[in-house]
Image (cartoon, rainbow, N blue to C red; front, side, top):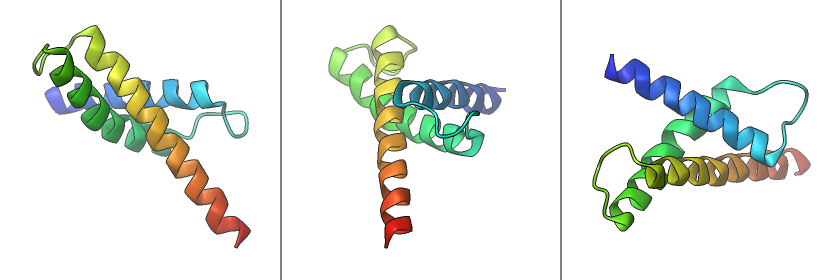
Length: 87
């Protein structure tokens, strides 16, 4: 059950990151949302929670860090994809 919850949270965070950066096309790329959400949540959420002193618990600092991490991952993913297309 925890794994399903983590995947759903990753999807929501990844979708939020795509909405922050602006969607390419009319719909959300759910594959990118899942990957960016999970990676961004792990890196950004863990770092911000530990730096804020919250530990590994679901706190606002971890959620904000997850979204920031997912925005960074989504931005890097889009940048690398457009860079490889132009070559």
